[in-house]
Image 1 (spheres, helix red, strand yellow):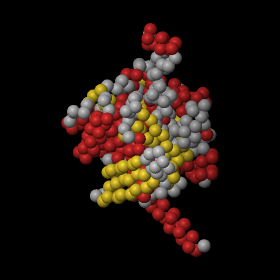
Image 2: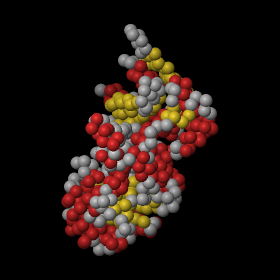
Image 3: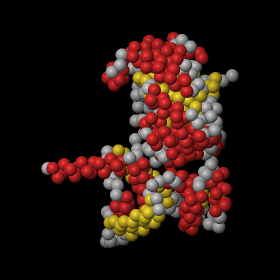
Image 4: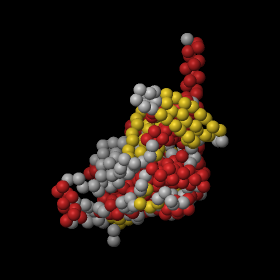
Length: 521
Ligand code: KIV
Ligand code: ZN
C-alpha cells in the first residue's frame, strides 16, 4: 500500500510573507475554506503574536474551517505560544507550531545563544505548548545549515517534551536534493522517538529546488510536506503545493507515495489565491499556468490529436480546469447569479451580491458571452473589496488628442463620501492621482500590469498595481471591462491594504518628522 504524505498548507502564513501581500480576515477565511475543499491535511493560518490582524485571522479561520487541522505559528517563547493558543483554540483540530533556529549562523549572530541554551528553550516551548494542545509541531529553523549531530539532539528533546511533528526547514533554500534526502535519512536513523512522530519538510525556493528537495525528502522517509499555493512565500517562495501534489499523483510508478488532496480543486484554489493576493500566476508556471496545457508547435498538436499521451502527462480536468462555458446572459436575474456563484464556491453577503449583480449587468450589456472566468473575476473582486475601508462609488475620466486627461472619483468610507478630481499624463495616471487626493495617502507606483481575463476585444481587464508607501510594498488588483476603472480599483485596493497595514499612520508620523526637521533647519 502506498505511504501517505500529509499536505501542510502554509499559504496564509509563509505565503503571506511574500512582499506586498496583506490579506484581510475575510480573504483569509475565503482561502481557508477553499483549502478545506482542496482537502489539505493542515492549514497554517498565521502567526498570531505578529499583529492584531493576524491574530483575528487565525481565530476566524479556526472557527470557520471544517476538516483540516488549523495551525498557528509561535516562536519558542511562552508569550507567543499563549497568543497562538488564544487564536487557534476554536479549531476542530488545533495545532501549535513553534520554532527556533539551530544553525551556528542564527544561534551565534541572531539569537546570541549557546547550543545548550537553545536545547533548553526547545524543551520549555514544546512542553509549554503541550499543556494547551495535543498536536505540537517543532521546527528547527535553518536546519539544513545546522550541525546534523546537534539537530538530532534538538529533535530528540522536542519529541521527549511532547512534539508530535518535527519539521526540517530549508529556511534559506540552500540544500540540494541528494543532501537533503541524506539529512532526512540521518534524522530517521538518529533521533530517538522519530518513529512515533510525523517528519515534516519545509523548503524555500532560493535556488529553484524547493519542490525537488521536498520530493527527495519524501522518498527518503519524510511524511509531511509544507507548501503553498502558487509557490508564494518569503523571498523566492516556498515549494508549490500544486506541483508536489501532481508529482505524487503522476509519478506513482516511481514512488509509492500518495496524498489526500482533491486535485480537481487545484485550479480554482490557484486562481482564488492569485486574485486575492494580487500575485499573478506566470503563464508558464507548471500545472496552473495558462500555458501548462497549451500545445503550440504543429508537431505537438498533431501528436496530441492522434493520442493525448504523446505530449500530455496530466489532463486539465485532473486539476479542475474546464473550458469556460457560457452560463448567464443579460436577462438573468439576481437569483440565477447567486445560485451560479454558489455553485462555483463563492458566497457573497447581500451588499456584495448586489454590487456583483450591477457589475454583471453592466458587463452583460457590453459583452455577448459571459464566461465562468468573467463571473469568477467579479466575485473575487467583490470578496477582495468586501472589507475595504474606501469603496469606489463612482469614477469618470476623459481624454482625447490634444486634451489634458482628467478624472473624477467619489469614494465612500464608513458612510462618508470623499471626492476629488485630478489631471495626469494619461487617464490611468489621472484617476490614480484623484484617488491619492481623496484618500490622502501618498504612494509611489512600483509596477503596473494589465492582463485580459478572457479572449476577445470585449474581454475584462485584470490590473495589478504595486505601490510603495513609506518604503513598504503593497499590491492591489482590480477587474473591469473598462481598463481605467480596473486600474482605479487596483490602485484603491493597494491603498486600502496599505492603510490596513498601518502605513497611513507611519506616513503621517514621517511627514510630521520631515516637517519638524524642515522647521528646525
Ligand atoms: O522557513 C522557515 O524556516 C519557516 C519556519 C517558521 C518553519 O518558515
Ligand atoms: Zn518558511
